[in-house]
Amino acid sequence: MFVYTKQYGLGAQEEDAFVRLVSVLGNLADQLYYPCEHVAWAADARVLHVDSSRWWTLSTALWALSLLLGVARSLWMLLKLRQRLRSPTAPFTSPLPRGKRRAVEAQMQSEALSLLSNLADLANAVHWLPRGVLWAGRFPPWLVGLMGTISSILSMYQAARAGGQAEATTP
Image 1 (cartoon, one colour):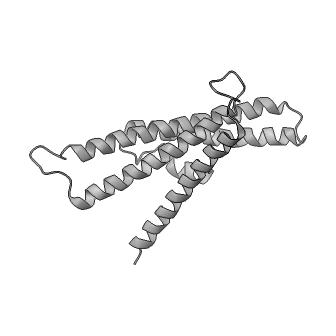
Image 2: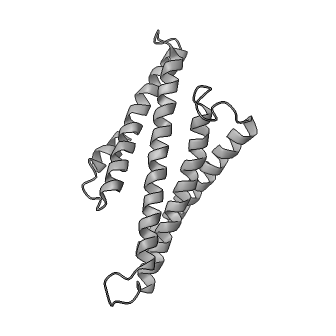
Image 3: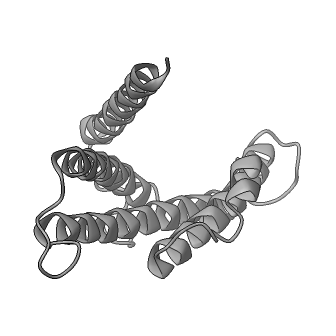
């Protein structure tokens, strides 16, 4: 994870300032999540003598923040991509060529799947926060499992689709 975040840096290659901001903040939340989760685990395993519940709450809140930023990014990207499909690229020009239109539509589908996956995970993240925070602790076990299953299936589908596209483009 650290290597990915280091490569992304401050998102200088992103054209959109909002996408850059939410991506950098999401990376920061992810980087803070891992040590918090490790401290919580170590406290539960009695390797560290600290209260694990605070660390679990902090790590879950960071997970939820990362997911919320991912949701915001996907919604913004869907809006921008939809605008690109609906408006001509310049005055007095024709709509996007078929190849570019297909690429934008594929990117929109990918963003929509990411959005749904992040929303399913966000529902579970909120569920695992302390009672009194939104719907924390109110999901029955079957719903927690369903949300996790939906997120996993969507993520596997996206990974398989990306792998298939990579194979199709290699000579």
